[in-house]
Image 1 (cartoon, rainbow, N blue to C red):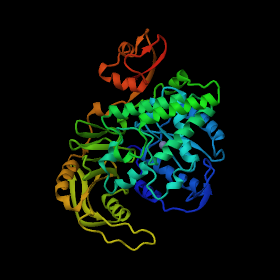
Image 2: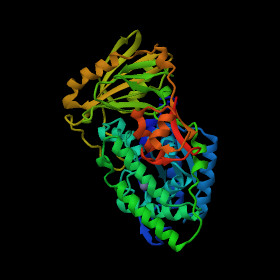
Image 3: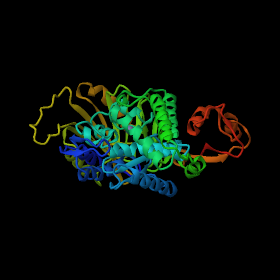
Image 4: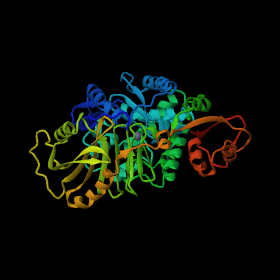
Length: 489
Ligand SMILES: [Zn+2]
C-alpha cells in the first residue's frame, strides 16, 4: 500500500474481458485454431492489463537486473516463434516467487523469484517458459476462463476473496491458470528457447526443485486452485530429460553463469518490505502512511500497493483497506457508492480514535452484463458490506468488511473491532523498520553449506530457508572463495 491507486478496482473489472472470436494460425503448433485472437487484439489486451498489474504489485527498480532481463529477453524474442511481437520485461515488487506473462508480449518476474534463482540459466528457463505461453497463444485459446489469476484475485477482492487465493502469497509459482497441457508445452518451449540462447536447461529443471522446496517449507501443498499445474517434482524430472535430449541432438557449450547472476542480485530486497506495511503480533502497521489496525487472529492477509486484504481461512468473510477517492468524507462516500454500485441501507457519522469517520452498510448491486437481462439478486446470497470511511492525515481510507447477508450480523462485530482499532502509528521502532536484503559473500573456508552459513553469522533456525535461497542442502560442500547468498538487514 504505497503507490495507492484508487481507480484500480475499476481498472481490474474492465480487464475481465469480453472476448473476440476469430481464427488464426498458432505460431508454435502451426495449426489453424478457432478462437485465437489477432495479434492486434493480444497487444490491446496487454496494454489494458499492464496498468492493473503495476497497480496491484508495483514495480521494483533495479537498473542492472532490468538491463540484464531486457538483453536476454530480446535475444530470446529473436529466436522465438514470434520475433515480431513487441516483448517487454518487468520486475514487480513482490516477495512471492512467481513469474507470469500476459498476451501482447508482457513478461513479469517478481523480485522474489529473481532472488531465488542461482544462475542465469535458471532465469532463462523460466523466461522461456513464460514467453512460451505468449508465443503459443495459450491465453488466447482459452478465453472463456478467468485468465489471469493476479487480476482474478483483484477482481474477486471486492466480492469475496477466497482464503485459498490469499494463501498463494506463501506458496510460489508460475501460477496463471493454464491447463496442464499448456504448462507442459511451455516447459518444452522453455528448454528450447533457453538452450537456443546458450543456456543449460538442466538448470531450469533444478529450479522446479526450488519451487517444490518453497512449497514444502510453506507447509502447504500446491493449493487446489493451482491443481491444473503439473507437480513441480514431475516437471523437474521431465525437464531434465528434455534438456538432456536437446543437448544430445544439438551439441554445444551450454552455460549456467552462476557468479555473474549472483552479483546481479547482490542487495535485492528479500521478503516483505515492511515500509509498505507489515503484520506483526495481530496488528497491521503501515510505516509510510503512519497508521495501524488489528488483524483478527488466525486470519490470512495479503498486502499490495493498492490494498490490504485479510480474512479467515474458511473464506466466509473478508476485509479490505484501500484509499477512498475524494478529499472529504462526503465526497468519498458519494464516489464509492456510485463506482461500486452500492445500495446503502444505513449511514452514520462517528469518530475513530479522534479521526472523523462515516459507517455505511450496503449491498453491492449485481452488475448488468452487456446484452443480458438484469439478474435478480437473491438477498440471502448477496454480499453485505460494512464500510468505514476514515479521514486521517489528509487522506480518506475505506475499510470494507464483506460477508454473506445471512452471516453479516456476526461478521459485523469482528469488522467493528478492526475498524475501532484504526489509529495513528507512533512507535518509531515500527516506523523505521528496514527490509531484509540478499547479500552475496565469499565462502570463508572449505566446508559444508551449513558451516559456511554459520561462519557468516546466519542463525541456525534459518538454515533451510537459506538452503532454499542458495539451492543447497546443509551437507553440500562449498569451496573457499566461492559466492554464496546470505540475508541481512
Ligand atoms: Zn506456466
